[in-house]
Length: 250
Image (cartoon, rainbow, N blue to C red; front, side):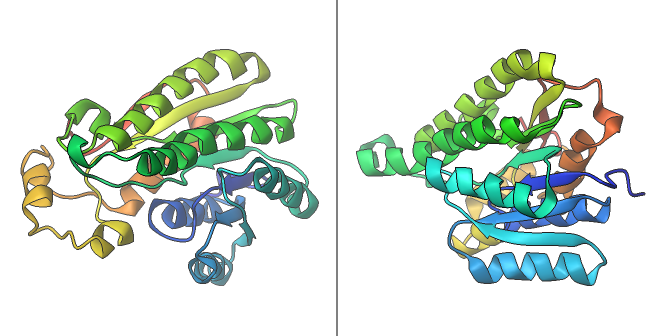
């Protein structure tokens, strides 16, 4: 449909999973996409190649979202290559699970530095590159903030912060015509989930699927389609929203 022709998007953590699906979906609608990655250069190159082979435009830019200097370089490179910014997707994130008894300062800092500090650093720098007509910033949260799953205390805390950041910045950036929303996935079978040894047969996953009204696990494309809607003019009157893309799981 090419609803994003002429637009430029930055998608953090786009070498695989949600990020790769989102980058490809935005490109399919005509956006030029910056595929950000921190370590997985092979995955990022794969995402760019798939976009280009489908007739889209994309470049890969390495940057850790938890480093202010690398984030500044990410947007400097975006401006150099594409000249502007219209869509920002804060997808980069990490997750670990375990009981409170296994809590460590090191794990806390890993999750909060990437999921919370990273979102703030990227948004702080990114909004400087939106033009007078504004744009759309989309954060990736989790339905876990309403599920309160045992063993997810640190991860869920980071995503609870994302919910608050989304609502506050929607108010703060609205006068600049910048819309800020979040998409909160339920159980989705990504590469990360699979690499952690979880499948639809795993008791934890199977239980979440059983509790999902639509009766299945999600796919990265399910999330990418909602993000794409929020990036387009179809969502021009939508801001400050936490959209549960979870098949009804809550």
